[in-house]
Length: 377
Image 1 (cartoon, rainbow, N blue to C red):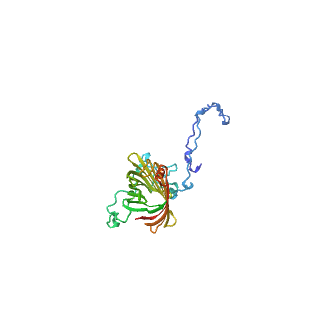
Image 2: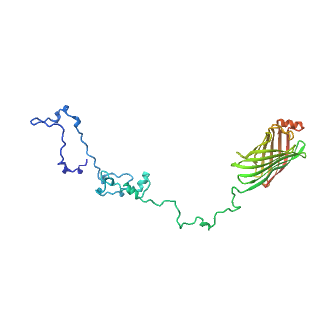
């Protein structure tokens, strides 16, 4: 306890605390405290001494607080309360009399405590907070003298420039003759054709296909399709349209629905289902892959299969999986648009289709050598 702060002038005027104990009557001796009988004392009326409140040390003797800039603090005499103001509007003070309403936290202390910097943070009354002026906010209308955003183009507005950009709706097309070849094997020779063409944009195309086989001067089969191609995912599209078959009897028409795309590991895959009046169904599967020995020398294996729900003696097809054909062609691209090739094909008829072939005196399995050209433009 710092006795230097005590007022000794008032100590002499302080009255001693009155005791509730009865004073001894006149003429009775006063007992010593050590021999006082406590059995008759009323403890409920006793009061414990209250320690005096601790008086903080002067500011000059206090330890500096970490992170606080004492150069911004007001060490002058504590301000007196304004008697003209109500008690609720008096500035907040602690026991030492310091006025914290005008204190501001330095930027270094704000950074260490995580607080956002403020220009003049006050903890005064609501009137002071309401009188704070906010800085300029973003948004709103541009000034009248603002620069035109199109002024850099000297008045030129945005417009389409044909031929200078590949837009999603820009149409383009291609014609591909994948194989125009001569075939020879088992004492027979013939010609085969596999071609396709399409025209349209990135998402919608018109697709035409043609595949036929001619043997011994007679058209064995010719399949033509007209399809609408619609992209639904990267490298994949659906195909809807019609199919027309000729050769080997009367013509036949089918409705076609399938999918075509580039499978993982660069397999070119095509699967199509067909239906015609009377409840007849068919399906076709085709898969190809390119093995690049060099940028010009390319080996292309191909696997194709056909399936029918009904037998067609005119065309020599039975029910179920009718045939599987495997081809292997090696081409040399003199140019990308012009590539001669040579290869072999193996065709195996299955099930009732093989029975129909044997009934006509034909073999169920044929092996042929082929040579031809691959063209596109």
